[in-house]
View 1 (tube, rainbow, N blue to C red):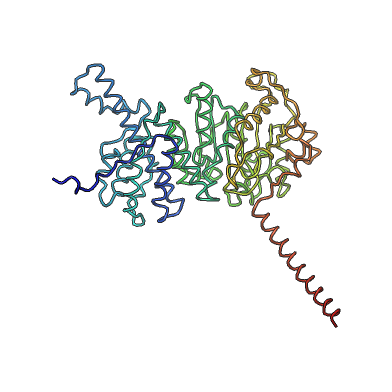
View 2 (tube, rainbow, N blue to C red):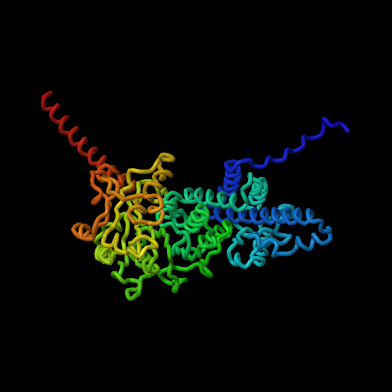
Length: 536
């Protein structure tokens, strides 16, 4: 046979060696479907397939480990097969059981011209075999509007990515990072709607670093894709704790986002209670009896369409207006705190100063009840999905040092931190808080509060003009209970930081420009008339 006449052998794609290469491969997979559906749709397709690939890779990795251990022990081959089929050998190590027909290699081999049918079947079989995934995985691949040719190409591309074998990192850690990367990319692609399921990572880290959720119940009433829980788990493990020390409770109103959150927790090995299904927190609280040690939340900003009941028992400090749910979220969160609990909430800046529709009275009542421990003004451009400037509210049921019986040290005081001049630009339109800035803010809070970490390091709190100030309730009262940090920290930085929403700024500048055009036209007319008089 003339070998020179044979077609060249197709080169097998190289396995990704770095996380960046893995990210690149997976993001290319999203582009395979980008032309046939919008960002919200292909998010569900790609993340569903990535999850399916992960559970299969993790299953194969565990299967190989079991075999290697048994061979080393001298177990006969006939008995090895029975151990390999023992489901407890997988689930006991945090690995999902994957039936034979749902394993990735078999799925790709048998996909044929209609891969969507096989994928939906695989999703169904995995959910039936793992109770924690019941009703979670997407069965959306065998529909008339799905391009089966592109779906087949997508399967082949994802096959080039292995979530195991990246140094000594477990498959779960690798996919957890990939999943978070995808959530961020899809949030950007979806624009404003992406903010419904994704909070910028530096903001989540700041919430967690301030609250320090070492152990106890963690709750999020609008949990999105579960990023708050993931970061809390990372905090615990980074401080040599155990993820089992946290009990996770959450709720999400959007069905597709609820599924993302369930998959996200599963990938990170977090056993959380997100309710039996999605539901509106105001209309149907899925955790009515839960009292939390820590609450982290990023509610929808200035939500006008919400399920309001004037007689709701949660409105201890005043009935929130029908046109804005900001103070409904704050009061719901406070109602969920244990006697020693603390909470961190992301809200629009208007919540710190609004006097409309009784919001000022509600804010005043919360301050006078000594619940508000800290307000942090965030820098602009942290939230790519919205131009609205944001801030962080922190509530503490007990303002004394954590774990101390001396409860009066910070009673009647609120800490104000102005971080608007912080952050580094990661591109022309987006900013994030740097690691040293996160540390500075968190350390300031802990020094003020006198927490255990502050006592261990000997940190002492001092007011810093232009950055932080501890105000008494009497001082706040003189400002009509307005909580904008710029009013308290001083140094005039408030006037130098541009926090005007970009859409409002463009509208204002456009109007000013048209006004100048009109003035210019009028001046031109006058000049022409005067020149004609001179020529006459």
